[in-house]
Amino acid sequence: MDVILIAAISQDGYIAHHSQEKITWSKDLYLFKKQTMGWPVIMGSNTFGCIQKELKGRDIVVAHRNDDPGEVLAKLNSKKCFIAGGGKTNARFSPYLTHLYITPHPLIFGDGVQLFFEKPCKMDLILESTVPIKGEKFLYQFQYRVNSDLRHNT
Ligand SMILES: NC(=O)c1ccc[n+]([C@@H]2O[C@H](COP(=O)([O-])OP(=O)(O)OC[C@H]3O[C@@H](n4cnc5c(N)ncnc54)[C@H](OP(=O)(O)O)[C@@H]3O)[C@@H](O)[C@H]2O)c1
Image 1 (cartoon, rainbow, N blue to C red):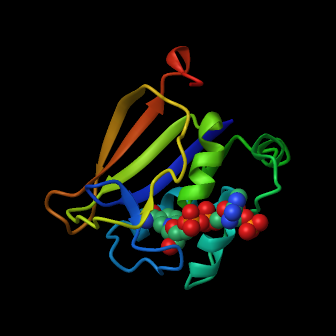
Image 2 (cartoon, rainbow, N blue to C red):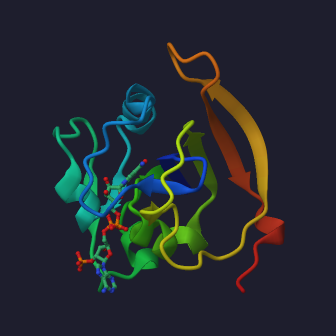
Image 3 (cartoon, rainbow, N blue to C red):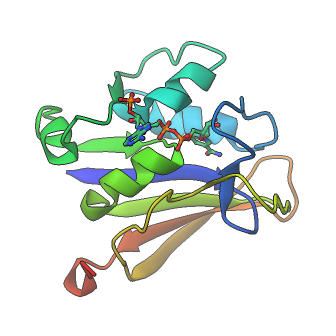
């Protein structure tokens, strides 16, 4: 199964100013909608609490602290799913990631919720594609594949 982390980030690696932030600064929401439509989307309870609109057409799976990420994924019975934050959830699911779709925004937060809250497992990434963000001259989503031959667990 493809397990794709999808996130908008600041240039210093943050996905939010704080854990309850409703994200209004990202320019790629339309792309998030297009790419996740029809697929399961896994997110943490803080992120679920921040969603402003119902994510129609997607099976939303809210991950809690006692859930085992491997079991959550095994139950999906899907060819593809998305990990949509926040930082705690991204870190917990990091050993299972096959792809990362990252849109770096021209912002420095200085502090906040990091893409990975705790140390993720180390990964070597292969850039497969860049997707221009509509209406933004120099903003791109970077689509990486995790090089599974070189996955580190330390
Ligand atoms: N820029 C982006 O693309 C993007 C994408 C997604 C999210 N976000 C932002 O990310 C922020 C939320 O991120 P987050 O990292 O705070 O939360 P999160 O990953 O969305 O949810 C928190 C997760 O951590 C667990 N948890 C909470 N306290 C814990 C503890 N002490 N020990 C172990 N597990 C614990 C929770 O379990 P329980 O349910 O059991 O408490 C839940 O599974 C929001 O502001 C959201 O808007 C940004």
